[in-house]
Image (cartoon, rainbow, N blue to C red):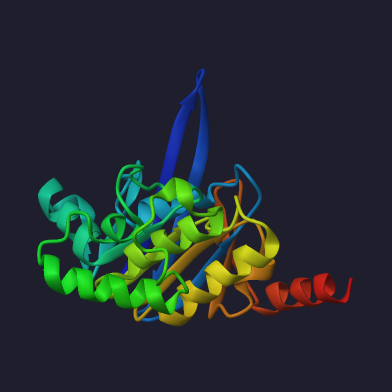
Length: 230
């Protein structure tokens, strides 16, 4: 579904070339849960932005369903991001004067079907009695669940999640990830520095210094078991 071919993203840092991503080759299959693991500053968010078309590589190409993003117009790329991709970021970006429900359906073309779908999602996520509250009246975990509902509204082909638990406590973070993993119907690309939330991933990519390697799922499962035992 998504393929990166010899992809690099470089910056000029006072005359020195710095690679956020370097010579990346990978494929994301339909319905696959891929974790991207790495420390802060390793390039994992840059990789997510490249795979989703939010950034253009300085070398190589990224393809969606066989078509390079660079061969598409900005309007076509925007349509893919709006209709076929879902996004969940580290901080829950919500419009403060809109209710939880209104934030989920904001910008939807078919308002009534969107409202019905959003109400069902929010109810399933335990926010049925709070969907008419403003973001300021919700906890951090509840706001992030609203963002998950927004990302899943039209059953996107791919959901990109960038550190979705970083601003949450451990228990709330696990609940947000559970909702995201269980309710998605397409592929999921999740970037994190915390291996404990990747226990259900089909594959885990480790990135450091812009270089990507594949590691085993057991890395996350082992780390999670050590925390539970502790």
